[in-house]
Length: 112
Length: 114
Image (tube, rainbow over the protein chains, first blue to last red):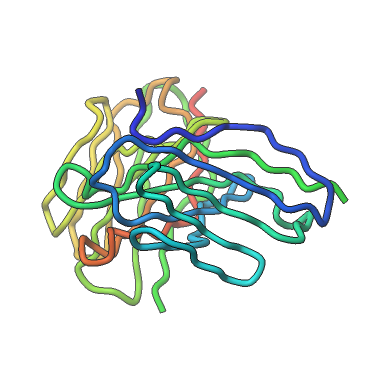
């Protein structure tokens, strides 16, 4: 079993839809949670960073962490064609989890 | 602000040829540095990481090697490329344990071995 599981998709939604992207993990030592966005043939860019449980909002993006369920989500409101990309979750913590562990990515297409 | 550079952006090399990819970081001191490989449609595979000059940890045994001759310079090398070395190579710098080792990526080098 992988430490971080992420549905690879692909996921296609119409413009304006609310998108929900999710990751589950198994290591309870994870405390830092990140979402990266990667456009085709580009390097990943950091989109959201969250420490421990709770919600964080930045414009149209909301990151949620539920440590009790070992589940994190990224919500995109009013999705735009420019949001079409691969989204990678990543997490780290202490001890054996101190290095960043990435999910395999979810490919998202927002149709105009 | 911090900036990370990688070159070349694209490279086509024959099997058995040597390889040298370079990564430099600006605007930060003593960063953690990382080399990843990303195969088409797949996740990130950590190859090497470094916490300081001359300190290299290898995650995957293979015909690649890494060096860190200066604080903000990270080099990925191979003496003889294999077909399986084709992929998208990404360099990243990390903030360290105090911030969950948040990593910031360069633009990548797309390597095709023929």
